Amino acid sequence: MSTSNRITTTAGTPVPTNETAKTAGKRGPTLLEDYQLIEKLAHQNRERIPERVVHAKGWGAQGTFTVTHDITQYTCASLFSEVGKKTDVLSRWSTVAGESGAADAERDVRGFSLKFYTEEGNWDMVGNNTPIFFIRDGYKFPDFIRTQKRHPKTNLRSPEAMFDFWASHPESVHQVTILMSDRGLPINPMHMNGYGSHTFSMWNKKGERFWVKFHFKTQQGHKHYTNAEAETLIGKTRESYQEDLFNAIDNGHFPKWTMYIQVMPEEEAGQQSYNPFDLTKVWPHDDYPLIEVGELEMNKNPDNYFQMIENAAYSPSNVVPGIGFSPDKMLQARIFSYADAHRYRLGTHYEALPANAPKASVVKHYHKDGAMRFFTNDFDNANAYYEPNQYEAAHTGLEYPEPPLKIDGDANRYDVEDKDIDYVQPRALFELMDQAQRERMFNNYAAAMGPCSDSVKNRWYSVLEKVHPDYAQGVKAAVEALDTDVNTVPITDDTPKEV
Ligand code: HEM
Image 1 (tube, rainbow, N blue to C red):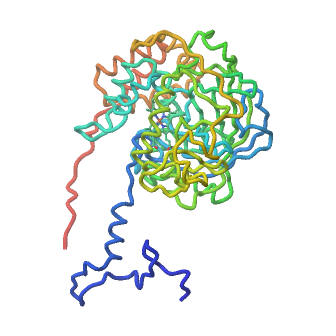
Image 2 (image 1 turned 90 degrees about the vertical axis):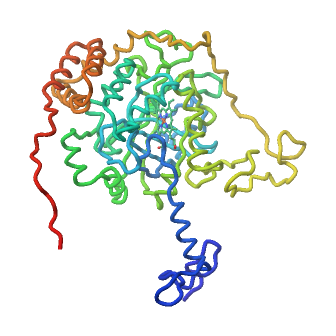
Image 3 (image 1 turned 45 degrees about the vertical axis):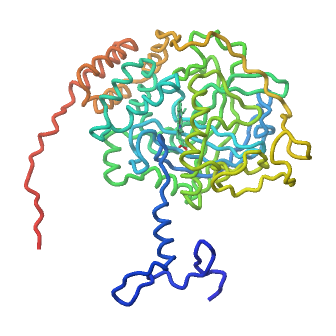
C-alpha cells in the first residue's frame, strides 16, 4: 500500500489497524500501552466546544460580494473602491434562542452574519433579519436573553418570562410585532432579508463622516411559514434550513441578495423626531432612500461545517478603514461582547482559525503567545517583539484617517429616551398590514401568550393599546378564543408487550 495514504496517529506515525483495540487474547483486557485507543477516546471527549450563548443553531455558506454601484463618495473602504470589485464572504444565519440541536423552523428572530475578507482585514456585518431590535441599551441584554432561554426550575422556555420582560420594556413592541407577524418565521435563510440594524458610519477620503444603515434584500423573494405549516414540517424534519440551503447550493441554485445603504449626513442626526441611534427605530425610506451598492451571492458549501461555520467568530468590532461605529448604545456594548465570547468559546488565537483568518491582508500584530499559537508573525526580525522599536518592522497608520466621532451629552445612568415615540413606528407597521396579515399575527400571539398569567397578558395588552386599539383588541380576542385546555386527549394504556 502507498505510504502517502496511510492512517497515522496525530504525531504522524503509521497506524497498523483501525479495527480493534490491543487486547490480551480473546477475553481482554486492553493494554494501557494501547495509545491509539487512548488517543481515539480522548479526541472524542474533546470534539464539542461550548455552543454560542445565543444564536447557537446556525447554517452557513461561502460566497462572493460584487460591487455594482459606486459609493466612494461615502466611504474609502477598499472593498467598495471600484465597480466590479469582488470580495470573498463567509455567511452564517441562525436562530437566537434555541440550542444547537433546536429545530430550524421555529418562530424567532434570525441572525444574519457576513464576514467580508477584504484587502484591509475582515469586516463583519453581524446583523439580523429585522432592521430593529427589542431593546436599545446593551445593559439590558443579559436579562433579555435570560427570558428567551430556559427557566431555571422547569428547564422549559417561559412565555411568562418573555412577555413579562417585553411588557416592562414597551420599546420592544416594534420588534415583537415583527416577530409575531409573517416575518417571524421565514421558510429558510434564502428567503429573508438581512440588516445591519444598528446605525454605523462610513468615512470618505476627504474625512467626511456619514451615518449609515446596511440592508441585504433577498432576490429569492420573502417567504414564510404559518405556525401550523412549521409544526407539520418540524414533525418531519428538524433540519429544514440546513437541507434547503445545502441542497440549493449543491444543485447550483446560488442564493443572492442586493446590498443597499441608507445614508444620513453627519450633521442631520438629531433633527428627526426619533433618535437615529436608537436600535428600536428604523429610518423611514422616504427620508433616507435605499442606495444600491452590490450583490451578494453564496455559492459554496463549506467542505467542513465545523471548521468553517461552528468555528466562525463574528464581531461588530471587526470594521475596516472607511467603516466605523456610531453612538448607538447597543452597538457599543456589542463591540466588547463578541471578542470576549470568542476567547472563551474558541480560545485566545481564534482569529488565526481558517474561518476567521484574514485572506488578503497580512496580519502583523504584537499579540504573542498563548494556547495554539500556530502563526509566525515575527516581522523577520527576532528583536522586534515589542513596539515601538528601533528596527525595520511593522508600522501603524491609515491612508485615510478616521475623522473624530462627535459625542455629546452628560454621562448618567438614566434612561433619557422619549417613550411616546416608541409606539409611532409599530403603529405605522400595523397600519401597513392587511386584515389577513393581522389575523395571522393575532393567532401567533395567541399561541405564544396562551400560557401567560392574566397579569402579564393585561400588561402587554396595555402596551398594544398604545400602539393601536385594534391591535390590542385583536390579540386579546385571539388569546381568549384559544382553547388552552391540553388535557382533553384521553389517556390509553400503551404499555408495550414484552417477550
Ligand atoms: C448588547 C447587545 C448584544 C450582545 C451583548 C450580544 C452578544 C452576543 C454574543 C455573546 C453572541 C455569541 C457569539 C459567539 O459565541 O460566537 C452573539 C451572537 C450573535 N448576535 Fe448578538 N448580542 C447583542 C445584540 C445583537 C443584535 C442587536 C444583533 C443583530 C442586529 C445581534 C446579532 C447576533 C448574531 C447574528 C449572532 C450570531 C453570530 C454568528 O453567526 O456566529 N446581536 N451575540
